[in-house]
Length: 136
Image (cartoon, rainbow, N blue to C red; front, side, top):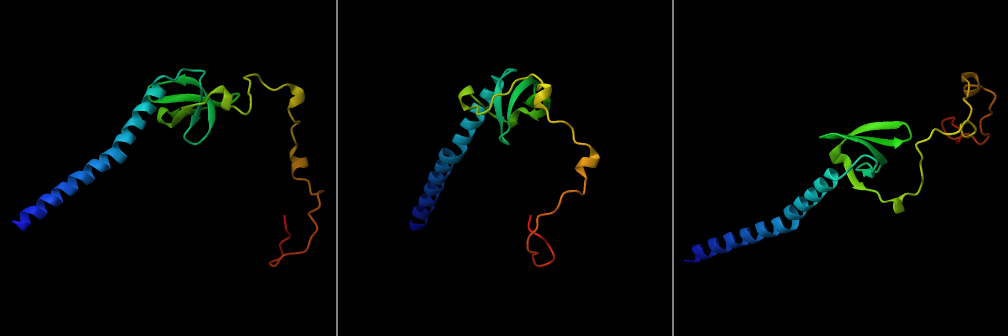
């Protein structure tokens, strides 16, 4: 008789642990996946989104499995729709971008190769560190 009692209590304990596992881990993950799918299905071109990598972008084209997003004016990339984490409301935007090209006076002039690699610059003077290196 004692063996039956311990078997019953063991089975009851396993059932309770299985129920707790389902309620604490599986069910919330399923709800989150369903909410993510619903959000992604509702996205339209022009919406501002954040990817799972934290990149803010504007959706340009939506496919069945992929989306083309614009991360900066004229810079587009293709991502899987699962990588679109959430919609970013306008209140959360810190910077404002336009789709227009920058004006000529806003663009820095190009640097020639000779200017870039010139040896006219003097290194920071300072005490040499062990190994013959100077601090940056």
